[in-house]
Amino acid sequence: MFCSLIEKVSDLNDMIIEGHMTDALEKYYDTEVEIQENDLAPVCGLELYRQKVVQFYESITDWRSAQPLHVAIGEGVTMVEWFQEYSHRELGEKKVMFVAIQEWTKGKIIREKIYYKS
Image 1 (cartoon, rainbow, N blue to C red):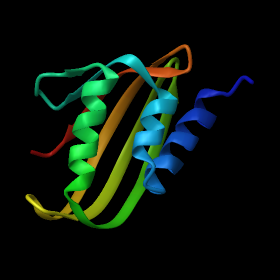
Image 2 (image 1 turned 135 degrees about the horizontal axis):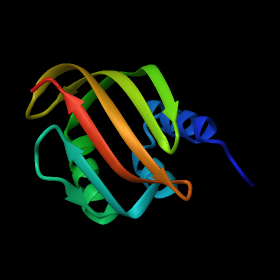
Image 3 (image 1 turned 45 degrees about the horizontal axis):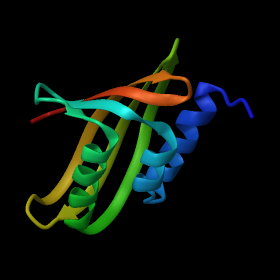
Image 4 (image 1 turned 60 degrees about the vertical axis):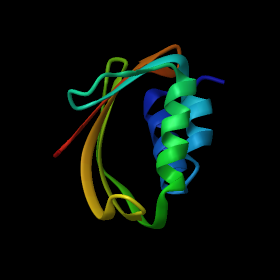
């Protein structure tokens, strides 16, 4: 069944809000995905990124909020501004705003760049 990009990014965001990030990775991220945070070296490949995500979420001690504040859709591109609030074992209490820019090909995210204040 054909789904529009707005339907896909809305479902992806819902999955993140509901705490199903690893399921969202399987459903919406290409196996050859490249994900980069700020100017750090990109993580290449879904399996490596999945490991990073699992490690991060295992260190969360209290997840309070995940809210997409703004969503923009373009030709094969989505942008989501997020606010998240949580307690992390190593990072402490966090209130984070960031923007994720996702490039889509054949219904999957092939590239994602995440910008946040460091």
